[in-house]
Length: 160
Image (cartoon, rainbow, N blue to C red; front, side, top):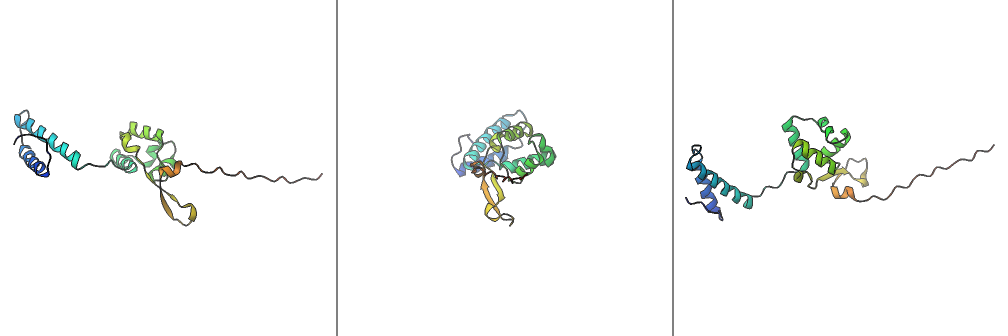
């Protein structure tokens, strides 16, 4: 079979069959070189026709924790407080830039995975205490909130 760019599904299927035939090639043989070439052609076709979306940032963190045998408390080396670690992993807090840098550098999670928008979950302000949950994005968190009014303390007059 002559190597060429794969453009159709039929060519792709034929290439897969050819790769399968070449799988038992001996090291440093012409068949091994041919296998490598066909594997690259198949990979190129798959990247174009079957793209894989990057994983969710929180799922990626949890997966890496599992791979490395880490517990939630171990992330305090990269995220400054236990409460923040908990909020991030439960999708109540968005990852900040310093968190993304630390997790990427120390856990080896690509930054392009961590910078994706995360679906955040927080209690609905309309139904506090009801246990109702509303999904929100990290954009909602970054919106400016109206400044809180400071309570004015009334001073009682003391008569002498």
